[in-house]
Image (cartoon, rainbow, N blue to C red; front, side):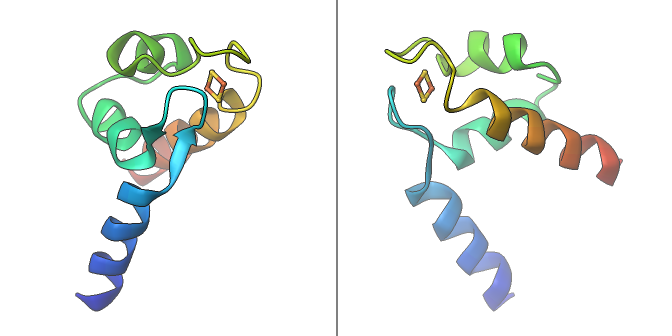
Length: 72
Ligand code: FES
């Protein structure tokens, strides 16, 4: 329980897409809602559309998608 809470808080404060200030929690929500490609996550959240054009956040998003798909 405590670990889940800590993870939840960390997900809310950690910006996966720093250019657009999009928290990891929002990325995870999109993935849980069926966005299973970087393009789909980008479309749902606006990630990868900032100044670096996804250079920094794409690898992290790919990682989160992979972890989510492995859990299924
Ligand atoms: S960090 Fe996501 S677009 Fe730059």
